[in-house]
Image (cartoon, rainbow, N blue to C red; front, side):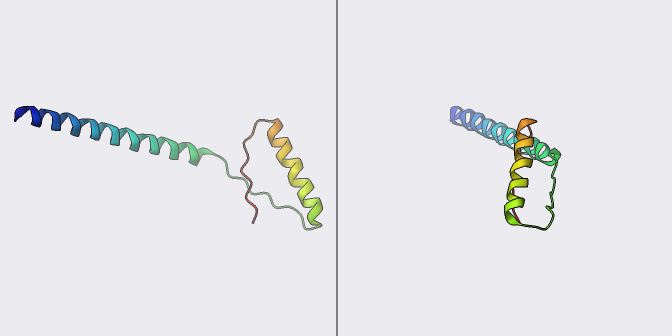
Length: 74
């Protein structure tokens, strides 16, 4: 009987340690995400073909500088 109590205690401790580590990791990832700059580009009114060309130029310039861009069109 004491063997089962010891095994249960070890399993409970390991479960708590794993859960605590998961929460710490999620918190650290949230901090990194919050530090990422959020930039909104407002293109001038005009032809959609020009806007697409301008967007492609901006994305190419960002890639050249090593900046990761997530494009969200609204």
